[in-house]
Length: 544
Ligand code: N01
Image (cartoon, rainbow, N blue to C red; front, side, top):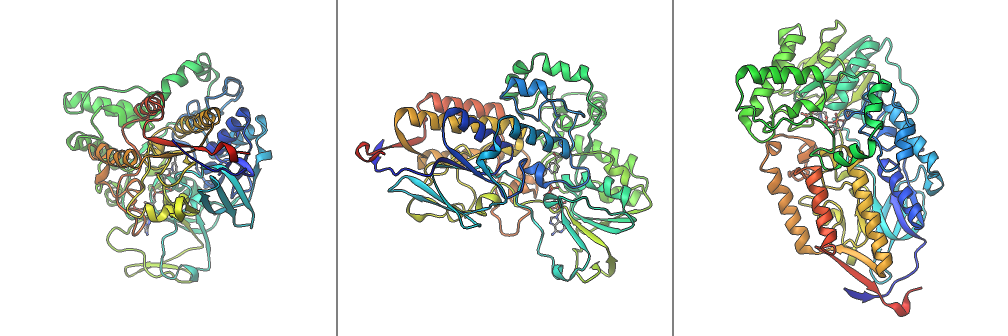
């Protein structure tokens, strides 16, 4: 521990983002007696669920589990209408939380943070907004989400197109009508797979442009029954505690058998039962789907068989059969009638895996020698995930060091929580933490608790700054890659690997050892006196 000077800041903590991370941070800081402010670029709370209002947007984790567990009254009083919640219901929940805990007073909406600079002498962060405000804070928490910087590829001639354009992750607040319109959807990831059946229901004609086919599992969504809700609410606290140590932060049945150790009949029956049950639990049918290519192939082939059964036109079915990556190595999609939508007369599929979309014109675009005309184009083209939102802010740490420059070859964090040279900068579910590889709200609560408890500890001990040791960070960065390479994940050109953004470094960004294992590691590190972190005290004579 070393000593330096410290200057009084405007607030103890500045938080970026009023999604599920930001809301819980504000609640915890409020309860702990810290002064906090939050800047949010939208005009409301809810983060992902504020921006992703595209038709069909719905969570793929059960509502009873995709919700906060920090407050018993909250989890008892809130009723979810469906087993898997629609975007509007999750957004209502976020608003309910903001109102119940009186959090709006800390949030400045429609305000983007553009720069943040650490002043080492004063031990404060100076944060600037695009609206011209500067705020100083002792602690700076980036809580802007992992999948929040929408990505529209640089299609040539894009600005020439005179029709409507939308990105699923930046959907208008006002309702959009596709009735009577010719619509293009570009992309076939999770967002597209949810939107396509809904748009197909409304549009005069829908053309889907697919680069790589994706695996999708039926959601089997259903109305929430009071009986089912009660199975959770009767012992919610215990169930939440169990979830926290599960591999994905979700309570679900895990099969501890290899797909290769059972008979063909048992394997098929297991896949069939999981397909009928639906959801992401499908991947848990056997314990080696994500680590053994031969096991993975059995599951991939089962799903391809289902696609061939559902889609009536054999040529269309073949294009929809994924072959470019092992199942599960791109985020598994969950749908409500995705493959069935291609049986409609008003839906066409265009394979752009070999011939990409050509130069856009006022009316549409060509693919090879076929010209397509549209009234609206929906870009379901994904996000600059994990790092995009962090890089949107010009973050500079000690000696003016830029985060973007330090991470040029890929993100460098300790626990996905902090980065050396950037004292008192915390990331919620940052790269190098399980983040998108688990139930996000569960992981958010863990990171928020860790950050707030750390800051409480610092207050109690008179510590002014915290930062990872370089050696600990380097070891963690290596460890994250070692663990990833024990799985099949690096075999996919996925956004987990940064592969969807031209020029982005290729490496697996989330920590894949499991939510429970990660939580245990964090607990051990704290119990060992914050092993791998270094603290600085202030010079007491200059402390205000
Ligand atoms: O984005 P994606 P998303 N030309 O990156 C294609 C979460 N989420 O918004 O596969 C043509 O997955 C691209 O093609 P390819 C979830 O974690 C959750 O759908 O790269 N096509 C791909 O098909 C998810 O994983 C939920 O070849 C281009 C698509 O666009 C994450 O958000 C719902 C292209 C992008 O797919 C992101 O999902 C929705 C180009 N130049 C989202 N560039 C639920 O909870 C890209 N593509 C259910």
